[in-house]
Picture 1 (tube, rainbow, N blue to C red):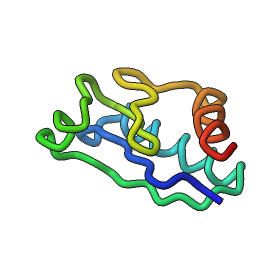
Picture 2: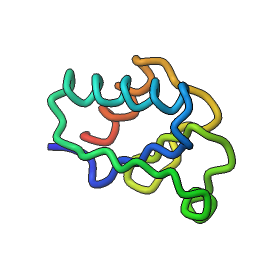
Picture 3: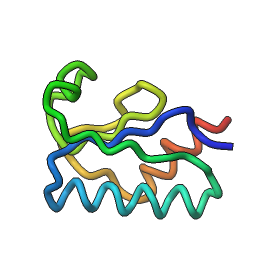
Picture 4: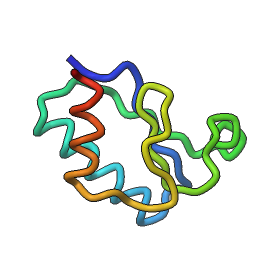
Length: 83
């Protein structure tokens, strides 16, 4: 089981990398099979409603932007999508 789509928006900065790493770790721990789509295109970010990076979008909903959420917050976002 997993989410339909999971996107991480950013330009590759250290916060983007940290969000990606924490999200991958949370997916593995929760046993979720969900491919991470990395979005670095500013036009696509704007179309998705992202105003600040890094941003985490799960199944089309912006869960967080402009900061790196804690590992526990990421797990909660992902867990909520599977119930």
